[in-house]
Length: 161
Image (cartoon, rainbow, N blue to C red; front, side, top):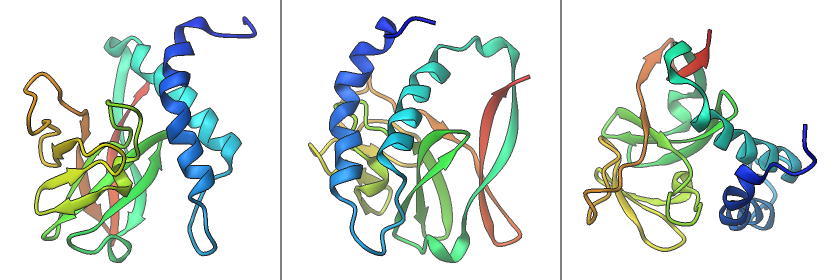
């Protein structure tokens, strides 16, 4: 295994502001991961995008209790080592990839107005139901199926067989 994976250099350069925002924005009472774990999760995120999708199967992952994400709010969670932005729109849960495609901003930390989330870094806006960017039809944020099971919100994830 090479010391430096050149396929991920671009991803690391784009994701560095995201990693630093998690580290620098930490404050007492905020549930946060260590900087090293955030970096590892970010690097693994790119690897998941490159896997062969033909040998994947789905499974459900518990991510947050229903009462921890009230209507009109968002939560940033980890599912299968991937950052997921979870939104509660009038009691219906939606999940998108938690990393903004623009410059790696934390979509789970964005403001939610009805069905629209705004990235806190540069204002990119997405429909949380579909992942569609509001002004560019060519940009669509990947989403995940959600369900409520025994007072827990679960996200459907793809994993290798």
